[in-house]
Length: 281
Image (tube, rainbow, N blue to C red; front, side, top):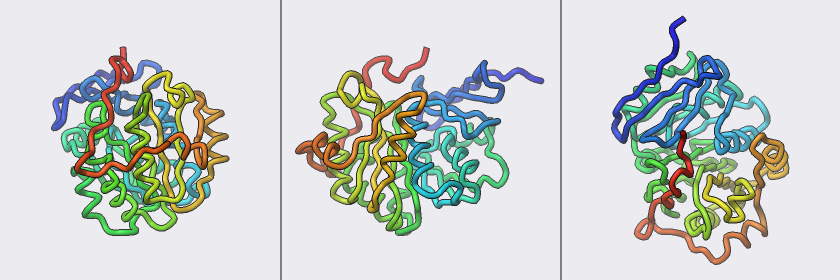
């Protein structure tokens, strides 16, 4: 058997590298310009390596009864970790993946192909533009995990963007996003304030040290018009190999404070992570 070797390619938006994991036979780490983007185990698509990806997975596990097929839109493609996960855990799901970097999609398709019948359609497009052109009420879940380098692009941080996300979701749909911030959390609080104007239920999942402002890190925002199963989410995230806390209700509103929604005209990317926050050795 040929030994897996690293692959490096300049794509539309940076230098992408696929590096084999020495501990897992067909597992790969994707980085773009040195920032870790995805981890995929082709033999075990339900294996989620990154902390934030595991938390997104917990949300996807609890949005509907186990095994039920869903219509899902993913903004941000990477190596298609979560589409693979959903194809395995919710077979028959129809998934659209929107990734601005066509070269990255080509690289992943070439070296990490999806299994036959995965039900995943990839679109090389800007996430906001694709969303604005999508029909209303077409998705059960919208997963946003879009980073330009290590920052969420400005046009995906405004309440105007959030309104498009709400339009695309069905009445009982769920929005879930991977975000990143650190104290004093001006970015994250602004995101919560914007989504609170459009969705009745919000939750935030993060490692306690991040929520206390001790370090910069990822936080998963969840929004819906219906009650979220925060008890199930809390059980799963607390029992995870990387424990996290679920904030919701009055405690989350208090944490958000008097933050105001961000409009397109004032939108800015998420903050630059401190040196080494998301890097790899």
